[in-house]
Length: 367
Image 1 (cartoon, helix red, strand yellow):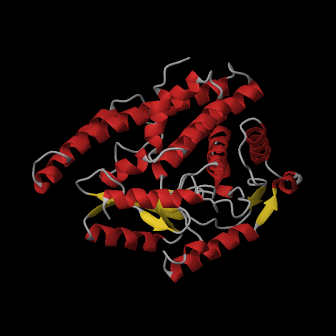
Image 2 (image 1 turned 90 degrees about the horizontal axis):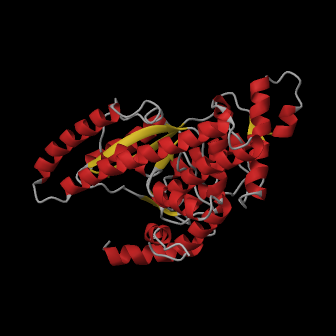
């Protein structure tokens, strides 16, 4: 498919941009993806989703239990407040999501596969009806994810498999809170919920990087706004959330510099064999530089020990592209999160390339 055909395909799929997206932590196409997935894949996905929905219980019902431990109680109450906050203060579509908790003995583990050519920093994408092209694919079965990775590697791609903590039904159902999310601290949990609810509010078909990065921005800035309203700007938890966002920006900047070095290598006139040799040197340099970053910056990113390849780099970049642009727009709008998200969404919907539109918005001359 040439570039013109890809643009035309993207424009055609954008007609369905009112439909809901996939999740922060993984992509899991469900039963409506029959034409793109094997029957076994669809049946397994449908079974696991039905099991999750069947075991939902209203959070208000769970809170009424006298033997509920206090930590869980506080987190569940906070989730309800977060949902109310993003709906009323930020204008998100909650669709009754996160009003229930799935109580299941063995919550499903999702394995997410990403891939990329070995001498090109470009994600391999899967196409699904309705949602378009996406840069990752989720499995409930580890061996199936590994088989997908092996097949891609045999075709000459780098691959990466990770586990996911949550997934979404694209708004087709009222998504429940999964029990494993309660293991996170309250502020991380709030970030996840806000991120997922933003996905249900806005999504551009075929734009994985834009969707995930903007939701990442919304999650971090949303937590800060939530805590600021509840506790005040100077509260310790609010300041910790600000620091977490600053660290995310620092990691994004670091990885973008690494990506620029790799792209320069891959676009150079040397042979493919030489590119493969030199990229290992770049990966080693990136890991060494990463180890010298402040501990707080690299706390949640595993670049020091994992074996790097293009798929690993792109997996992180899916959530980190354009964060500085989003932040600049937020600052220009007087730190009004609802207003800045509204501007970003409007600009993104009006352009063939949302990042080009957002860059123009960020570089506008203040009136």
